[in-house]
Length: 323
Image 1 (cartoon, helix red, strand yellow):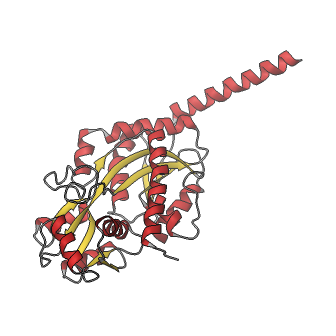
Image 2 (cartoon, rainbow, N blue to C red):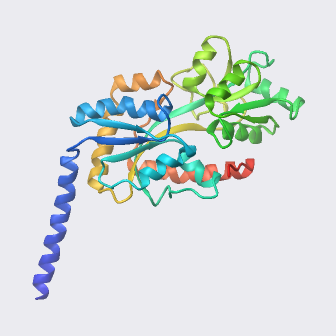
Image 3 (cartoon, rainbow, N blue to C red):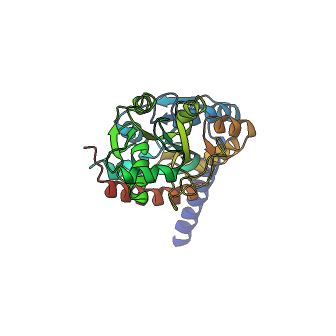
């Protein structure tokens, strides 16, 4: 009797493993939805549509990009957390995923418990820009000027707790200066304020900043990433330019709901990595200021854990709250 039970359990285990493996091989057999927490044209949306087109060709299935902006990204993220864990509903998010748990008193998801990391897809550096009327041409110039005028130089952002806001607060802390925050209702309004001189400094996403820099309407001082950006290789990093150790990027990454079968996660990761490494895709994303990363699920999981700690510290130091 014991032997029969043992054999039965072994057979169940084999069948389960076979079923999971087959699930990965057969996936997808119908259209796949990618929920995006930003409106069309934003970084995550660009990644989802650029990569989704190639994935659709590879999978011979339609990829549906489902834009769900609002709530600081919480609306889409909650939707992704509650989706059926079968691989047919994925979510592509950015920094808000790891910022919001510290920024809001309560968020409708747990970034570790409710999701399975698939891949860290891209990095987008912010560019430190100033209005041409500000008499600075380098990061060191800006720091010297800000120290001579404490509380008199302002910076714009797309709102409290946005990456642009927190990037500037990190800069304030690291450089020991006191620039004043002017929050606007969204990144477009923040950029407009910079262009008309209402604000003097901004930390803008590369894709948003570069057209105005090339037109001479804004002056670029540095990029905020660890390394120089392929989109503007001549521009130094903030760390190189006078604030050692400063680093911040907007990232875009793909998640599946918790309990999604590992074979399916592995399949999606493998195909995403293959697509992200296609020269045509890499070139298209670089043109938008997006640098491809293509990580493993484990690497992405570690990145998320570190990012949660980082943003918790930044939010606490800047004393930022949105509710």
